Image 1 (cartoon, rainbow, N blue to C red):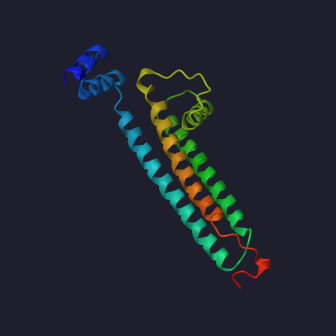
Image 2: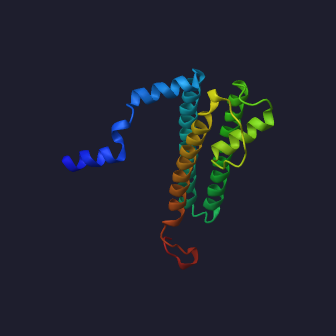
Image 3: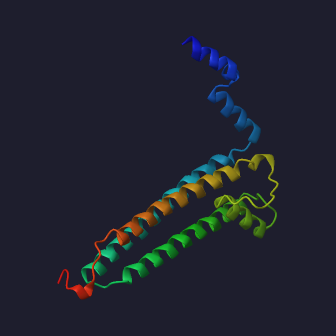
Length: 179
């Protein structure tokens, strides 16, 4: 234990604030109770995104199974392409939703600027140079986390769908296998 205590003192761990003190200071610094509303909206958006991706993946697997049973080869790749498009559309809808939230909260003076901000934060591109008021400095973190988690869910679903397409035994309809 002596070694761990010594290392902790060297690294300055004894100067760290408690979590509650740190949280209280950040909350006071922001001075913005609307952030809690935004956090709840982010959780709701992630829930709806997860449900949408689950429905898209479920529909894909159902269609894929039906097409495979009827020996319709190649059509399942079309259904995969449609699933990709639907997932992209779901992400675009979420960027627009973040834009509406930012417009409602009057984060930026213009709507196009708000849309570009929401898109850059959601995709974590971070290209633009946006100056936020002190009360909204945490907003990019919230939007970025929601985008990261949404893209992760989408990636997992697309990986599952691609696995369903690629993990089939190679069947050649001309060989007579399975007839």
